[in-house]
Length: 252
Image (cartoon, rainbow, N blue to C red; front, side, top):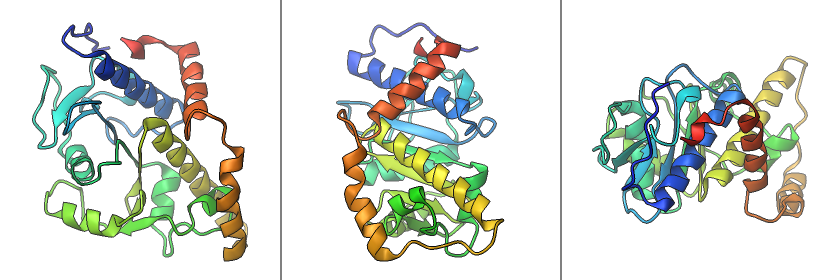
C-alpha cells in the first residue's frame, strides 16, 4: 500500500475533504463498483478556487487513502508533490464540469455493468421501478465519442448536460454530480439500483412504465423520507461505518 504521512501544510478543511473522498473510494470498492485502476470520483478542495482531488492513476480503489489522493488545478497541474500520475481521461472529463459548474462540488463516473448496459440501449433509463422514477426527466445523455481525452469534447458535454446533474454517457457509463459528496453518492447509489433493476426486469417480459402523473407525485414526496443532515449524509455515513469494520487505513 502506497500511503504517505499527512503533510503539515494541508489545511484542516482539505484534510477533511481528503478523508471523505478516500472513504468514498473504499465504499465504492465495497459495493463492487471498482473497475481495475480506472474510473474517478473527484472533489473540490474547500476554499481553493479551481483545485480538486482525484485518485492516483495506477492504484485500485481499495488502495486509495487520504494522503495519496492527488491535488490538481483546473488545467491538470499537480498542486502537491504526489509521485502518482493522473489519468488524462479522468481529468479531461471532470475538469470541464468543475470549471463550468459552481455547484458540481463532487463528480462520480463509473463503468458498472448495469450502468453501462442501460447507457447502451435505446431510450436509456425508463420509469419502470421505484428508483428509476426518482430520475424521470432529470437525466441528460451524451453520445459516445471514444475515450474522453480531447478537450474539445468538453463543450458538447456541457451543452448536453444543460441544467441536469445526472448524465448517461451513451455506450459508456454513469456520471453524477452533487453539491456535496454524500449528495452525489446517494444519486449514484440510487441510479445504480435503478439500472440493476431495469436490467433484471428486461429479462422477464414487457416492463410496466409508471404514468407521468404518478412519477410527479413520487418525486414530490421523496423529501418526506429523508432524515436531517442533508441529502445522502446518513446513507454515506452508514457505509463508511461498514468500511471501518474491515479497514481504517483509508484515513491515513
